[in-house]
Image (tube, rainbow, N blue to C red; front, top):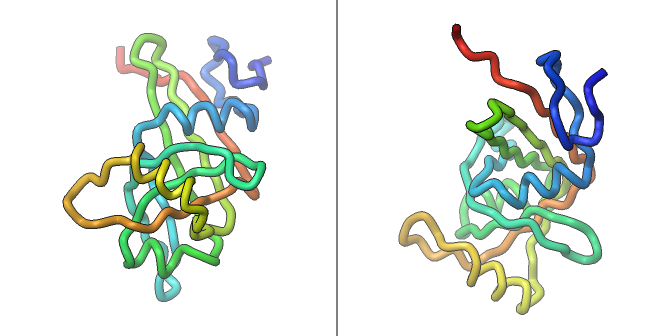
Length: 148
């Protein structure tokens, strides 16, 4: 049987669930992820750099954005955030998905911290900070099958 704590992978190559705590740890290690929002009844996905922090006593994914689709289609609505990774040394891959309502962060100290830690990928001013708390957090881990 595959371990269920997200700490290791057995040789069965079956996907295994990752614990909620380990999901948050892995999200914190990922350099970027993808935000999914719904615009005009269709999903749109945006790559974002992010960090994981405590917001109001709960873990959340935080990212910076300008006044645009991520802000207007995300804040106050259900969204999904996904990040994944691969450990090349062990051929172990993982994927974590967080779903919840996106919230505009208005606390000046939190906004300053996030702004100082996350550098925008391009020159657009990104003065807004958005948090996605984990109404649902789930992850899977598995070994990659390599061609022989």
